[in-house]
Image (tube, rainbow, N blue to C red; front, side, top):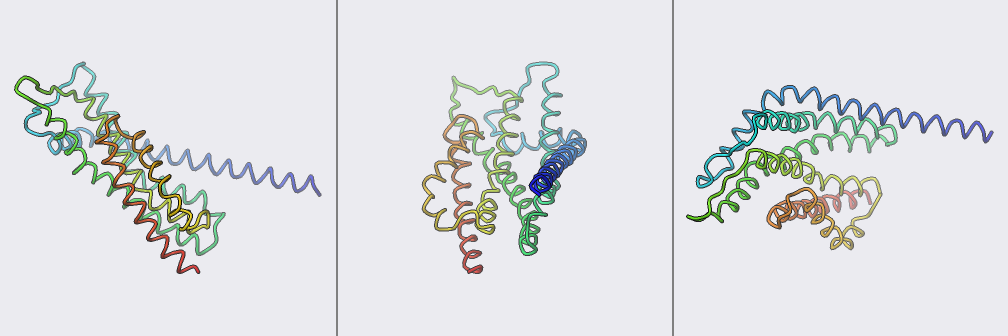
Length: 243
C-alpha cells in the first residue's frame, strides 16, 4: 500500500514538472514569435521614444560602432515581443495553477489575467510618457555653457527598456497582495503590520530594477508603494466579504 501511495506521489510530481515545462516552453515560444513583429516595430518605437523623451538642449543621440544600432534594434524587438506576449504568458501561468483551485478561485483568477495585462500596459505607458522624459530632463538640467551632454543610443535604449519592463512588472504588486489574501496565504492585518518591511523591500526591488541613482529608484518605488496601498484596500474588501 505504501509503495502504491509513493508511486502515485511520484507520478503526480512528474506531472507537475511536465506541466511546468510545458508552461515555460509555451511562454518562451510566444515571446520568440511576438519578437518578429517586435523587430519590425523596433525602429519606429525607438524613434518615438527619442522624440518623446529628449529635451531640446540634449540634441541628438549618437552611436559609436557600425553594428550598434542593429544590435539595439534586436534588443528592443525582444522587449517589444515580451510586452506583446505578456497576456499569453499570464494565461499560461493561470493554466498551470488552475487544477489546484476551486471553482470560485478559478473565476477570481480568470479576471486577474485581464487586470494583470491592464496594469502591465499602464506601468509601461506611465514609464514611457512620464518617467523617462522626467529622467532625461533631470539629466539635462546639469548642462551648462561649458558642460554639454553627448548621450549614446545604447545607454538611452538600455535604460529605457529596463525601466519600461521594471514599471510593467512592479505594477503587478496589487495583484500579488490580492492573490495572497484571496487564497489565505496571509491576512490583511499581517500585511498592515509588515508595512515598514514591505516598503523597504519595494525600495530594494526598485534599486535592483533601476539604474544606481536615487531619482530613478524613487520614481519606481513611490508608485509601487501607492499601488501596494491600493491592493491592500481592495484586499480588505475581499476579506470582509469572505467573512
